Each structure stands twice: as C-alpha cells, then as structure tokens.
Amino acid sequence: MKLDPNAFGKVALLMGGQAAERAISLKSGHAVLAALTRLGIDVHPIDPGADLLEVLHREGFQRAFIILHGRGGEDGQVQGALETIGLPYTGSGVLGSAIGMDKYRSKLIWHGAGLSTPEFALLYGSADLPRAQALGFPLMIKPANEGSSIGMARADDADSLASAWAEAARYDEAVLAERWVQGPEYTCAILQGEALPLIRLETPHAFYDFDAKYQADSTRYLCPCGLEPAHERALQALCLRAFDLVGGSGWGRVDLMLDADGTAQLLEVNTVPGMTDHSLVPMAAKAAGIDFDTLCGRILQTSLRPSPRGSEPR
Image 1 (cartoon, helix red, strand yellow):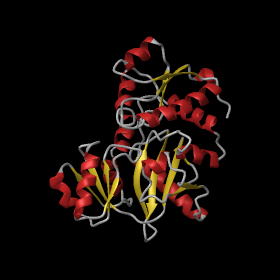
Image 2 (cartoon, one colour):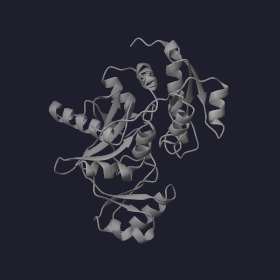
Image 3 (cartoon, helix red, strand yellow):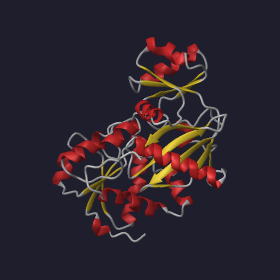
Image 4 (spheres, one colour):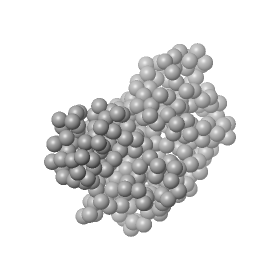
C-alpha cells in the first residue's frame, strides 16, 4: 500500500480513557502509535480528559485515530464530540458506535431483520431474574454495554444466575441474559467494506473470557478456520450484513457461533476492536496478506470520508 503521510496532517491517537478497558486501550494504542510512526504519520498520543476538545483545537490536530475501547470511546460519545468540532475520525459514526456498543439493541435489530442470535432477556434488577430463567439453563450473563468479556459469566442454575447478574451489574445497570450456545466460535474482522478471513477460537475455558483473550497461552486461533470455502464466504457475508445493520462502518469485528444445528448465531459487534499482540483483527489481516503497519494505515484512511457519516443497511 502506498500511503501519503501528508494526506492526513497532524493526527491525534486517542488511547486510554477511563473505561473498564483502559489497560487494553493503552496496549492497543502503543502498538498503533509505533506502526503509524513507522509509516511517517505525524501522530501524537492523547489520553483524553475533560479538556479533550480544547486540546485538539489548541494543538491544531486535523484528524483522530480512535483506539479507545469500551464506554466513552466506542459508544458514540467521543465520536459525537468530534462531530461538533468537525474533526474527522476513524471507524464508525455516532449511530453505529452507539448501537454496536449496546449488545441488547444490536440483537433487537438482527432479530427484526431475520438474522439468528441467541434468545435473550434484558435484566435491570433482581426482580427480572425469572425472565432469564425462562430462557432455560445454562445461560451467558453479560453487561449490555461492556467489551473484552468484562463482567461475563456462565449461569447453570438459579444461584449462579443471581451471582452472575450481581457481578455484571457492577459494570452496567443493564444486564443481558443469553441462551447458552454450545458450538464452535468464530470472529470476522471487517476492513473498509471487506470481510477478512474468519478465525476460529478454541479455549479450554468455559468461554472466551478476558483471560483467554489477553493472557492465557492455551487459547488457539485457527486461521484458516477449517470451514469449507463456500461456508466461510456465507458467514463473511452474514457478518458484513450484521455490521451494516447496526450502522457500523470503516473497520470492526463481528463475533458468532455455530449452534448444534449448524445455524450461525450472531453474538456481538466491536466497532473499535483490540490491536494488541493477542488481538484478532491483526491476525485476520495477516492471514489476508496485510501486515500490521498497513492495517493501521488502512484504518487511518477511514477518517478521510466526509463527516458526519453512517451506514445505510443493505
């Protein structure tokens, strides 16, 4: 890829923040900073505070590379702030970021469009637990607006459901209960409208939790994923459709599983995925012949589109 560093001007790399995923954002940010520097980009790391817009204006930044994970950075808040000052930024717009971060509303949209996603219930308090039990055990319990598997747990009975709900509620007042899916898990990275090769995730843990994602050496990442080419293409098309439906654009990731009947069950969207040495988008890009520096350059290119922006569902 021939990338003209002068096309981007002075770039603010937004990393860190105050969300539960701060540590992962900083790790992603340092990797992206090194890559963009190697590409000759005039990039500067910014750990945003309350004076973010003032800093961006005072220092004369011309665009932002967003690598903030979780709430405040991946949910439309910083995107909306940047829109107000007319500063171009990478990735999904306000709407796609907000919906993509909200697992419950993402699932409502997919369900309404006829796409399969595990049965679910939204819990706002302990009085809602019977609604989760009605789905049948086992269940996956998770905060509706967190990432990196933070606050997630499996519930096998009423007691473990209550404790799993209490843990998830520490991170978000809205907790999602989801019917447990037994089957292989896959992830599909999306870059500039293209679905990259699928990765199959295998872990000895009960599910792909925080430790399996970022710390464990026992997690296996299979790419090629082992599916027949036609099946993989069909799942890639499904993921592109799912990403479009929630308003995603630029780059991101869609996670899914195949249930006992072989039906693809959509799990969630990430509009600012991790870019660490354990992260999935760089792995998929590498399998597609895209090295890490080129990947970062292509993500930065998504900031060149006019703003405001969104995505019309296909």
